[in-house]
Amino acid sequence: MESEKASVSKILNCIAEEDVQWADFFWIGKYNPSAKMPRTLIVRLSNPWLIRKCLAKSYRMKHYEEHNVYVSKEPTAEEREKEKRSLITHAKLLESGANRSTLKLINFKLHVNGKEYTDN
Image 1 (spheres, rainbow, N blue to C red):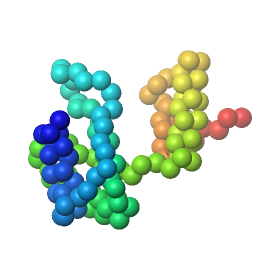
Image 2 (image 1 turned 180 degrees about the vertical axis):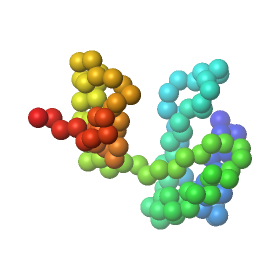
Image 3 (image 1 turned 90 degrees about the vertical axis):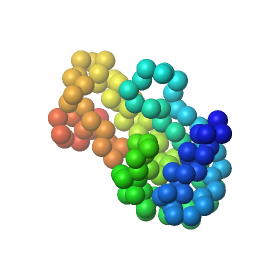
């Protein structure tokens, strides 16, 4: 656990170029030693200014060698609700026989065959 905290601090310090104080972090999903992709790590920063700074300077992570790092902002409650509705519609379309490769979620909106899906 201590090495994970050190890794999180090292990555965030690399992005922000300063000592970043973070409030909490946790892993998403179950640990699987044979997994090809590492689990997602959610880090909650303690300061809104640091959140903006880390998002603005996240391009530095494409050159970070030790880990694959993707930085994104936490969605708002409204964005989470839109995504939830789109995912429910996505599941219903799959149950009705839609081809998974034709369904995409882009900017919290469901697209079928490249066109925005509307529930008519």
